[in-house]
Image: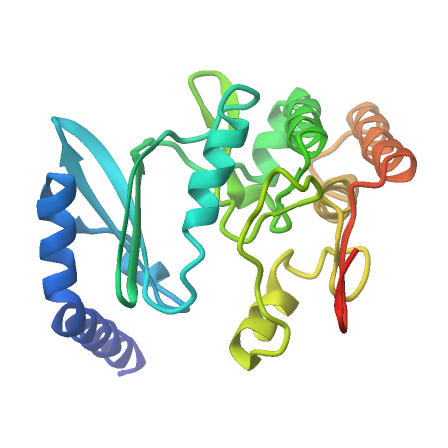
Length: 256
């Protein structure tokens, strides 16, 4: 019975989205020349986000749509700033119409990283460290660092989802969430999955260290040698956090 209710709610959610945004989807597809638009992972639609796949000039693409917060321009900015430093999905197009925003990126058929992946290949941890180092040195803080925002593709580690990224560089300007807005404040309190250094403080190195320490160090599949090796990797995250000031904090009247 419960399963049927969930299926019904899912269908209603999709129907309402299409009812409200059918013209937006049509205009986006026309303007960006997207063919064969298809629903994608509708179970993961949340907070006004919807996902589709399609084809642009024969290339399969992933389409992320925002109908509530309108922060997808941050993804475009992050790609332009970081594309020469790290592996990041290529941004193909951006579309905005009233309360409908969409970003089109290359579709990459890969699974996100898991703790088991890191146990099988601990060297991935150092690759994650280098990615975070690269983006932070460029002045960008991801703020929502977690394993499911990394994936393995073509023998390399990729990172994505810079929707809520911020910058410490005056030359890079991202749109920021408004703490005074109840809904946006809720998002601010949730990004980082609770692995933040403190309330409304973000440090990518410390967040990833906490994730890895919690999921890896006590994992039953680890032998003592592998556990010690992973602890050494974690020390590198701690060193980066200790000796670099790549932290971003929101105060009541501003940011630091």
